[in-house]
Image (cartoon, rainbow, N blue to C red; front, side, top):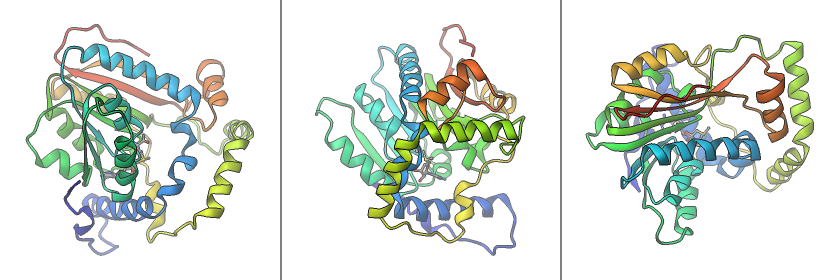
Length: 295
Ligand SMILES: C[S@@+](CC[C@H](N)C(=O)[O-])C[C@H]1O[C@@H](n2cnc3c(N)ncnc32)[C@H](O)[C@@H]1O
């Protein structure tokens, strides 16, 4: 593993409210939380692995395969976690650098990669802060991916700009599991009812998580509230695309969907109920000639 010791970043006093300091505190909380609670990660995020999400991910990956056809792809998965995207990339024969601030999350990913057949793509785990990884190096890539990471980072747009600059001509940026600005508060009665229904549909998952929790002690984290830091108001898709356009990235795909814990509710809400709070998945490309795909 390459290792740039993200924990070594100095933490300034708590009353320093600058964004850099907030970023360091969030990073520190994330490292501690993910290193200590890695065993609970996947059963606490069923929205990232249920059947409907897998179907949506397969569609995105097939789009990426078409856009990157004919290349020996060099990919980066930023905030790779236990490898949802990085392993899917490696299974396609793409060589992947998996960047994550948590050594323990990357350890799980690396173990899983070792169990893949030998002809799969190589994996280079990098224990590193996303911001530093993207801003500092000069190596170029064909694919840079973010899944459920950008909205946790206060400097998301700058990080996106740095990622865009690290793409080769024809290279793709893939962003998924990011919230659009909410138009209805989550505590509104209708939203609460839907959450309740979602919880009912995922009762088996809740039982599974309760069993895992019994066998693995849950570690509290100093500054724990910051683990769940969300960029206020979700990601502004217009600012996001303007930033990317300034770096020469054109949209190839933008899909809105509902991030729910159960596959049934995710499907129902995306296709029938269409409640107002959406998430998005995006593919952009530097150059290339394909027609854009809309949501
Ligand atoms: C919600 S998880 C998403 C994991 C994975 N991308 C997925 O889709 O399953 C967020 C991951 O980002 C990592 N992370 C959070 N902040 C980071 C940062 N500033 N730099 C690098 N990794 C970060 C966490 O350690 C965690 O593994």
